[in-house]
Image (tube, rainbow, N blue to C red):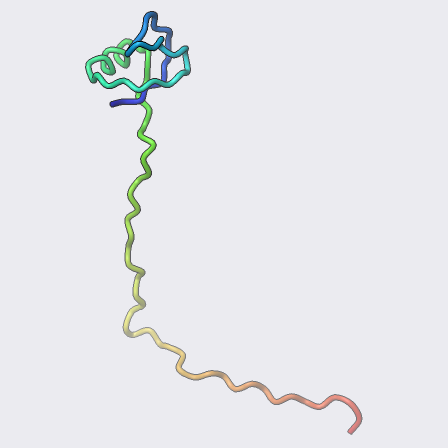
Length: 84
């Protein structure tokens, strides 16, 4: 089944329903009819609305020779403010 956007006017009906006006969308099950409408410039095929699959990738690991911080810097001593 293909979804089509109508680019021109088609008279008559399809599957018991009138053809949509220009700019309307219709789902057509016959591939031969889809090909005929597209070749004749009366319709264009719309992409499927199904979401694209998400491809998960692993995060890039840092090189093994990367230096790592293994210590915490010591806080600076507080200075007293006020009368001494």
